[in-house]
Length: 396
Image (tube, rainbow, N blue to C red; front, side, top):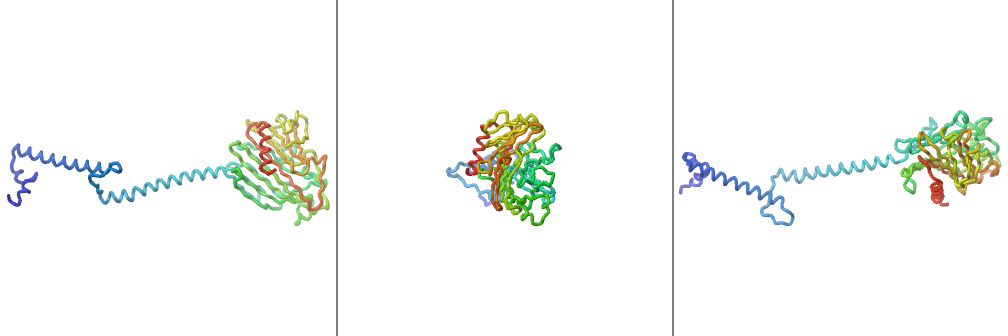
């Protein structure tokens, strides 16, 4: 056999190409078919090896091309990492947005004399402290359903300002704003903060220094030396979204000031921490209290000793309940003033009309009240339980 014999026997050898017979054509097709079948068998074997279950010994190791190794080792893991990273960022972003939406933010505008507290984008409280006012007070307080539960300076009583605290030390009238009234002069904020309380509820609080002075002394540079009372007022707003509760805790730490050797606290039956209710409450709201006092608020006014007092009616077509709470450590005896005609009013007092309190210069006394707002009717049993919870949280 000549050296070229093997080459001559290849499927497309010149020898066979030169012979044009049916037999030659058949042999050629048979060899090509066998070649294709062998290639298909090798590919099938490689795929089975690549996809085999773990633990089974391979018949033949698949060696991917360099390009495939690069893509499988670098590009695919990189893509997976990017997908995982994007997923983690999305989840953390959603969680952060939810956290932000349920957080309270506190903003102060000194020029306007306003302090604003919001839950996400929802306004919940506006504290007004402009220096041209007679007193700082909560001008707006909103339920979680978007209803403002306070009324400020209505035409019938311009001195009714939302939620406010005022009495008559040494006979100086800090309630009605006429005939040389007293002025609760805001000095500065001592503290402002927001976060969460021990129960994890969103919370915001601020403390303001206030000098209680006669109107003639309101612009004095050293108003502290002329003050009848010096107050450190702390207002804390807490939100419990699952129960629909907005809570305002009003704390006053007082000291008999240097404006007199002795200070006598007096006041009318309604002087204390009072709130003017929405016009929709007038004449028709329902008053009730911890003592289940019958006919409460059906007269022109009532003054009743109790642990708490509540009033309920519709605002913007939805029932709302407001509850004022006192606690045993407060100076004086806790009484509640309730009115239905000609307008609805609720205040918590120290019963100063019947039992005035007297303090020497520098003597301290404290007040601590809680106002709750619910966007529905609340039964007395639930309110009583909430009062007990508040006392327990205070460590009483």
